[in-house]
Amino acid sequence: MKKIAVFTSGGDSPGMNACVRAVVRTAIFKGLEVYGIYRGYEGMIEGDIRRMQSYSVSNIVQRGGTILKSARSQEFRTPEGRKKAYENLKEFGIEGVVAIGGDGTFTGAKIFFEEYGIPTVGCPGTIDNDLYGTDYTIGFDTAVNTALEAIDKIRDTAAAHDRIFFIEVMGRDAGFIAVESGIGGGAEFVMVPETKTDLNQVVKSLKNPRKSKSSSIIVVAEGDDEGNAEVIMQKVKEKVNNKNKDFKVTTLGHIQRGGNPTARDRVLASRCGMAAVEGLLSGHQFHMAGVVNQEIRYTPFADCIGKTKPLNPDHLKLIDILNI
Ligand code: F6P
Image (cartoon, rainbow, N blue to C red):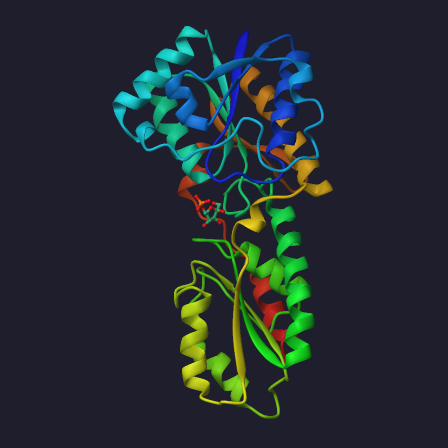
């Protein structure tokens, strides 16, 4: 293998740049030519592919976002789109690819690279932490810390006004951000898509004069089965039916996707980037390079996207115990 390419795809996450840097520099260290594909699968289809040198990735290890840009490509879902992408890779003589992204990215990679046989190794880049085959994903730690900072600030004003705040964090299908920011931020309740939400428990607690605190923080993952934070707040408010209680909603949204990556994310990203290039060279054709129990582990794409990474039950227990 002499020429490889790297791209970032799907929702960006802090640390993607550190990962691109590690891929580019490891490739050069190993004597390979390396190319950057811009805007994920969109750029692959359009042929937006550029040679990268060591200096192309200078001064990016600390930056959020992705210098290669990202996209969610509809055209790549079609066989015609994937054919165009293949022709572009062929024209550039690309023999191996590193894909940095989440489950959508790996689903596309699995179909495409099995169709056309170009070896691909993935790096887990998503704030959601919902990929099987790695303890943490690149960007998760930064996103949790961003959410935590916001929760701390909201707690100040919530306490000052004796208000009940529902804080919505990202996570359409996964509650990892909600759980960790909820524990760290001392939330009374955390609502996640993985478990059935019992609003009556929240209502009971808010109505119980002995248990009721003057202010409360409830963290809601955007994909909770009872709805988003606004919907849940309205349902709870109606059931509590107490004019003296003041309910508020804050949706943190895309603020969680940006910012300088934490040390943990930069180290994880750098390790996975290096491992991805080494994986390509050692024949791990359709795998993701993740870190499990401190060690690099290569997991087949089929498992990364097919198996569910469960929330840690100890974390859920902790929230219940600490909210007494
Ligand atoms: O997958 C990462 C993520 O940030 C999810 O948490 C969120 O639901 C989604 O992306 C938002 O996607 P978009 O930025 O395309 O609206």
